[in-house]
Image 1: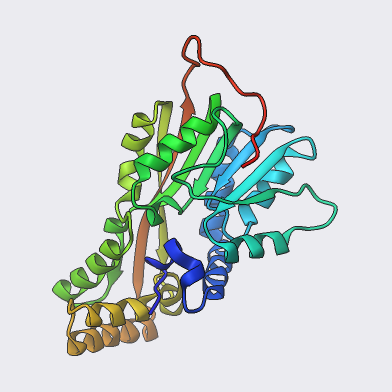
Image 2: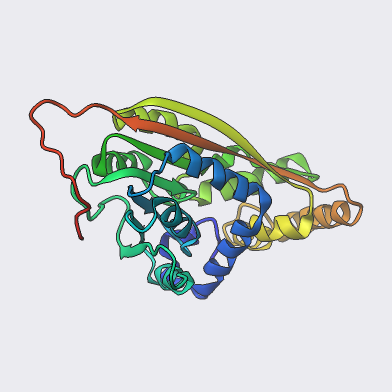
Length: 285
């Protein structure tokens, strides 16, 4: 059984890889995420002709938006570890518009030369990696000096749901958080950016609130999470059934509540160390 908590680390091996593409389509349609994306694009400060890298490009929505900002003279590249996602991204390209390029690459070992990009961005990707410090160092490595890095990640320890018996709810939410490779990604970002040598680090918390139970079930994959928690022995079937019943009753009454805090973190790569060469073009992998 694949869940959206851990499945993005291995989409191509999932039982239904295209369900992850559909999931991203849902996320990208939500006003909250549209606003967060707009903020992150603005923070990059992209000008026409810029070279931009999108880490974990998914279905290509962000790479296409960044390509429009960089213009025909710019160079926007989206990378992903999933061939399924890259195929979806390439299919979304619109003829006649600025077209991003797409590369199969691991964020922990970027296939580009040092100082290749004016700006590097990633959005809800580091939570699915084992070591966000490694990825941030790679992002900084390929960014030109004085270039911008923008990262947007949740901290799953801030995930709350109401109603639910307190101890059972804690078990469910902790299971979800611990099921994600880097469930504490959000809170780790400022330290990871500093360790990567970034300056002028800013942190903006943004809170997603969902009061529709059907939407929460899709976004947070609640039914799969409950099933996996029972399989893992975290909950027994009685607890899971009772907890799900409480959610359903609250949903029917219009009293369901859930929220999750995301962090939009920006930083600037510091000055070039004396004697170190700078590359002026994007290197092909």
